[in-house]
Length: 314
Ligand code: VTB
Image (tube, rainbow, N blue to C red):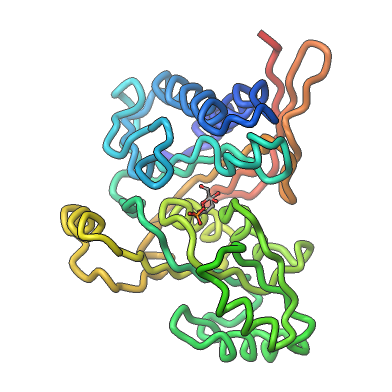
């Protein structure tokens, strides 16, 4: 198996070092500089690995970030052929303001197994593995999803909590959830972390849904797969440019609803290092001569763990 433990440790170093490189720009009010620091670090470190990698999900037009662009080849060119999805700084606003929620994240699979996602929005739904698969669906009404989750968990609707990005585009959904007396967790950014909140009861999130970045959807799916959670997504192609790009990527049905196993096939590895603090992993800590980081690592075929790393201060 090419996605082995040795590779996991190297990838943890990649997101960990990207997080550390971003640290100096926390709270400086400049999203671009923080993003560039994480991106440059990630590109450099991935290029030093013995992999034959290609970026299938990168940074791009959506927020005009400094890119690790789609199609970019990474690694020394020898070693396993892998697809790489990166979000060196997920939560640029969080980093610029030095508030909770910023992570450095990547996901990999063997070649051809990670969906080549366009830089568009995606309508998403995620639920934990304690809810039967057919109980929820992206195409069900809010009410049906909520009632089914409540029934399967033997809870009242007013005991459920839904996580959703706080955006005007979600006004109708949010109003409906409120009228159903569902509790809300409205996040300002960072819908990878948002989706991951369904993975464990301790986060108290019964459902994650709404429209966020497509690339973030694919990356979340890799982690949710390891946890055995449900995820569905549908890309939203609005402009002619979006539609043209999708066609070029080989997407013929622009309205297709993707199941998790169509987005991430086979084995995968996901790493997310905390830059500022998150519910899953702690922030980068500076201690005398070293930085300490925490990385959530999921490897579908072996384990899910939080790895603490140390790097000397340069
Ligand atoms: C989400 C979120 C990101 O963008 O994908 C969101 O995960 C979607 O875009 O952290 P809008 O901000 O346009 O709604 C971010 O918030 C920022 O990239």
